[in-house]
Structure formats: C-alpha cells, structure tokens
Image (cartoon, rainbow, N blue to C red; front, side, top):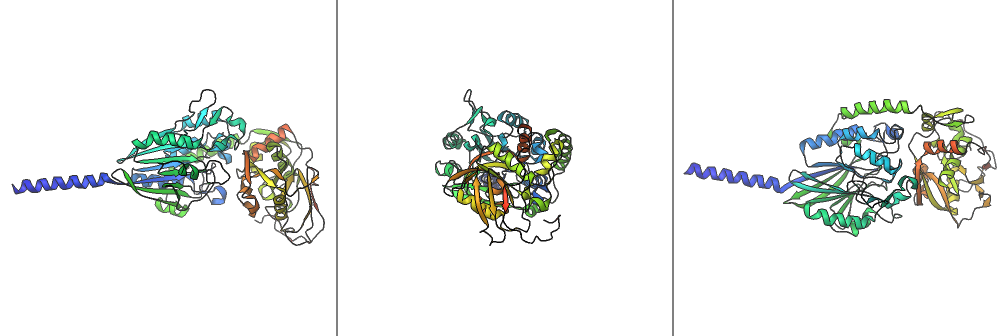
Length: 515
C-alpha cells in the first residue's frame, strides 16, 4: 500500500513538473533588416557581421531552444555587386542556407520589378510575407500574407507589410502592376484573423520610424490593438532596446548587417509575461558561435564565382577615359564627377544633383564599359534618392563641400544643374559666393529638388544638414544609372567649369593612397 502511495506521488509530481514546463516557455526572435545585400564580413570595410557568422549563431541557439525564429524586414535583394549583378538571384541560395523563417519585402526589393521579386520569392525555402501588396488587375494578393508557427507549445502568428512609399521609393515602373494597401487597415484585418489563434502575434514590416513618412511602425502600433512585436526596417534606425508603443514592442537593427537583433518573449500559460530586446555586435555574435556557417561560406564562394562571369558583360560605351585620381576628385571639380552628377539629375528629373568625390573609386575606361567597370567606380551599392531642399540648405551644403580645401576631402562635391564660386582664402563656412541654379541666382527661400546618395541623406561625410530632407523618390544603384545615362545621353557637356575658385592657396603635399 505504501509503495502504491509513493508511486502515485511520483506520477503526480511528474505531471505537475510537465505542466510547469508547458506553462512557461521562452520564445526567441532573431531579426535583421536593410541588409542591402551585405552578406560578407568584409562588406562596408568590415563593419558588416556577415551572413555566415549570423547564421551560425542563430542555428546554435535554435539547437538548444526550438522556439526560435529568424525574421527579416526587407531591403535584402539589392545593393552589392555580387547580388545585384544577378537581379537578386544570387541571394536565394545564401538565404536558404542561412535558414531564415520568414521575411517581408522592402521598397528596394522591388528594384528589379515586381515580377522578378515574385520569381525570387518562389525560390525561397521560407515565405516572403506581404499582406498589403495586391495586383492592380484583380486585387488579389501577390504574396502569402501570414504564417502560423507552432513552437514548443507556443503558437506564433507572423504577418508581413510593405511601405506604401514603395510606389515612389523605387522606380515607379517597377511597381506599375501592383498596389500597396493602407497598412493600418491591413494590420487590423490580420489582427482580427490571427489574434484568436495565436499566443504571440508578430508583424514583420518595412515601414520605419521616420517622421516624414505617412505610415510608420509607431503609427501602426498606436492605431491597432493586439500586435505583440513589430520587426521593422526602412528607416535604418538602431533601436538598442526596442521601443514600446501601446504595448507593442518595435525592434530594428539599423542597417547593413552591422548588428543582429534578438528579442526574447517569455510566455506562461499561453500569455506573454515579459518582452526584452537587444542588439548584438560582431563580437557578441561570435561569442555565441565562434565558427562561421561552413555551408554559407561554401555558397558564398560559388556565388562569387558566378558573379565574376557576369561582371564581364558590356553595359555601355565611353568616348574617352575619365580619371578618378584621389587627389583630383577630393578637392577639385572633375569630369567623372560631372558625368555622374549629370546622370543622377537626368535619372531623377531633379533641379540639381550632387556626387561626393570620395564615392568615385575607379577610372572610367575608354571604349567598351563592362559591368565590373561601373561597379568599380561605385563599389558601395549606394542608391539614388530624390529629396526636397531649401535654397539656404543648398548654400550650407556647398559651404561644407569646400570647407577643408586645400586639404582633400571625401565630401567634396561635383554638381549638376548649378554653378557656384568660392574663395578658399576666407574663413571656413563663409567661402561660397555666387550660386546659380539653372542659370538663375539661387532663391534661399525656394524649395528645389535634389538627387543625391542615400549615404548623404544618412549624414555621410558629416552632411548633417541633409539628414532631415523630405525624400520624394528613390531610384536604382549608381552603377546602373551611370550605364543607362551613357547609353541614352552620352558624355557631352561634362567639361569642368561649374565650380569657380576665386583665389589660390598653398596645396599640401598629400600621399595619393591616403584615406
């Protein structure tokens, strides 16, 4: 009898223990956004963590806790030469090998056209989720809207949203056959459908937190009830511990794989009891998994070999060679810079355009121009933005351009659509004199349109005055635009004479290979 009593106690104890295990669980969400095809730990001068490194860390955690997901918030398939050369195709085996669980589409994922993005999505081993992208022809969804994951006793619903800004933050021709529905209304529909079925509801979206955007992740969190976590992208914002809005935790890593996001959600009896977010740097990722994912390293080698063959494609013709000599383009107007600025203004149909000398990294050859040539000139995967700018800000921008002359400066600008004079013998920030926009004196109270790099709107080269411009359009990468311009317009009118230096000062003896 006593043995039977203790036997019952043991059984009851085991049931209680198992019930406790089922009642409490930890859900881990790894997340990335705005990779812009940065997949190697050497990208961006070694700032990027690397896909093989991140994959190894995520897989190491998944092996210990099956309740782990990896979500990506878009702008993934376009950016660096190795990927863009294949219209995004080379990204597919890398993402599949990495083992992502779901992603959504960013505006730049449409840069090859919506039909190509559909083709890419079908080759993924995980779903590209988008609940607010429909065909104009019949109103039907282009991509799968959501997926429900059952993970170690936790039911997780994930739905995707893309920013309606995609309509103008890629070439409009790329999205002429699709429509972007109101993301707030779509989110409410997804919540109504998924919330009753799920313990945790996640929206993975390419929306951002920029105040200039009509729809932001913050607005969606404010105007809805029931989203537990928003995995966000688009604004390139690093939210170190996330942002809590209306009980919705919003997370974003910044951009370019500089950080890997990790959010931990504790669930007890199918209810969330805590949420916490953090961003991991390269050292912290390597601490989780010191050895990179060998499968991805092998795939990277194969993808690089494919890309090398494609880089020999002839994409344009050049009447003559143009120099990118560092000491030329970083302190003097150059024909290569003028050509690039003209190409940008032509593509953007803007009033003015600029290009920084530090972004011109190789010479333009005479004769046949191959893909590798244009990508060598512009190796950073920069995309062209169109923004609104006041005349007074144009003056401030030009003052910064010539602030350090005669020292070389990567931020020295070549221009299109305007001319200006400056006197380097005067105090810095008070050197620029006459500015003409399309032959007319600049109106400092007027708003102009300007074509410029995403690098500059992010404050690159300390162009802080350009960080709050209203973005009204986004186009392709610099190398693509340069080739298009050479094919459609040519090289006429690029001779120097747009920037007039009113005085000469001693020029320092700098090493041509300096940084």
